[in-house]
Image 1: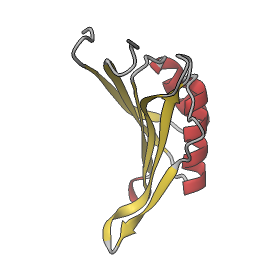
Image 2: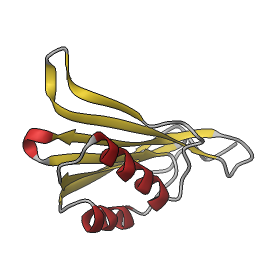
Image 3: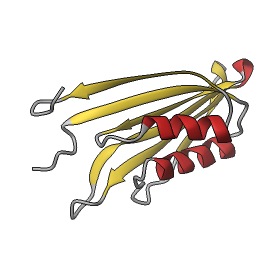
Length: 131
């Protein structure tokens, strides 16, 4: 049995920035590279807000992740970007069944995107997982 799917590691960062939809997608591409994971060719999905007059002004983008090192493709999480134009910041979240280097990601966001205002993390453990 694979270890993938036993646990979910989630980290989020608030970054001071103003980004277009294309820039958010580019950040997600770089985050996938930073955590050395793979999209399996699945495209990033982008939603622009407001929708039918509801929601704030901004963009939400989700890039699914897969892992292919175990002789097949297994769902492994997502990288998410969520911008808020009025607040001049974005949230970036990584949720993955495989651990990743959170410090490297935070350092990259700070050096390439903007000042990291805050960050937080939590881990979820499934049956058979460890905690």
